[in-house]
Image (cartoon, rainbow, N blue to C red; front, top):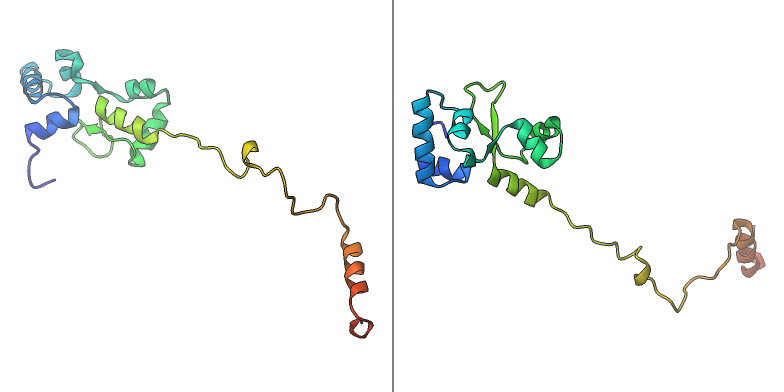
Length: 149
C-alpha cells in the first residue's frame, strides 16, 4: 500500500458513502483547513465516522475492549493520525455492522445432555453400585482353582 495512493472511490467505499458525497466532504474539509474526521463530521453528520468513545457507546462495551478488538484484528478502523504510536481511530458504520455480524452467535443445544434426546427404554446398565472388592471376589470365584494364586 505504500507504493500507490488510495483512490477516492476506494476511500468512499471504506467509509460506506457515495463517491460524490465523499468528494464534497473532502472539498469542504480542505476548505475549512482541517482535513480530519472532526471537520468531515461537522460538514456532514451522515458521514458515519465514530471516534473511540462513540464506538464503545454504540457497541455497549468499554473503550479498552474496543482497543482490544482493534489490536486482535477483529474490528477495522481508519487511522486519521500521522503517527503510528497513537493512531487516531475512527470507525465507519459498515465496519461496525460487519463486526457485529461476525461476532453474532447462536447457541445450539448439546444433543447429549438435552432432556428430550435421552433414550427411554432398553437400559444397558443395572441400577446400583458394586464395590470393587465384591466384584473382584466374584471374578475370583469364577476362575478355576489351579489359576488362583
